[in-house]
Image 1 (cartoon, one colour):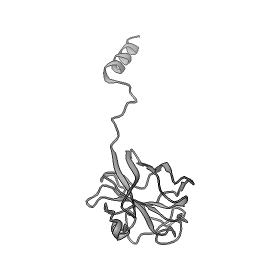
Image 2 (cartoon, one colour; image 1 turned 45 degrees about the vertical axis):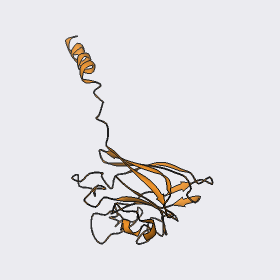
Image 3 (cartoon, helix red, strand yellow; image 1 turned 90 degrees about the vertical axis):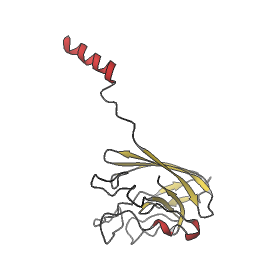
Image 4 (cartoon, helix red, strand yellow; image 1 turned 120 degrees about the horizontal axis):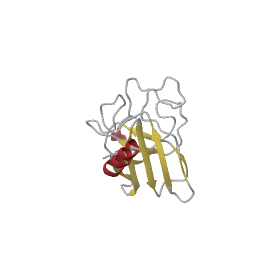
Length: 174
């Protein structure tokens, strides 16, 4: 009986044993090539990866490749090329979720946009981390990172970007 009371007191005064501190959440505004806001993204640190949520409108219907890119820069007049390559841990970068030799940590599954141009999705990646220091490439390293949505779907194998085409939307992860 004494042990049960001690457990109950610890729950009352320290909170539930399963309670975790609030996760760190980073946000970004998703911009189109015309410089207008299309929506927002949130990136949440998880113990073994990150959770990415995208909420956007005004994107062309169909499947689109999505990748984390190595620099926190989204210049629409540069067609978002200033965002650099995909986040990676080693060179040369080998792309493709379906490629057994891949080391491209920026790879994410394709997303689907409905006929109304709306995109709402939540994805999980074990390939990156938000902060440096855990063995995975960090999104918030010295030059930051961004999220790019491409005009076509990623085939998960072709080099260097899976045939995903032009960069149509970009968000700096802050």
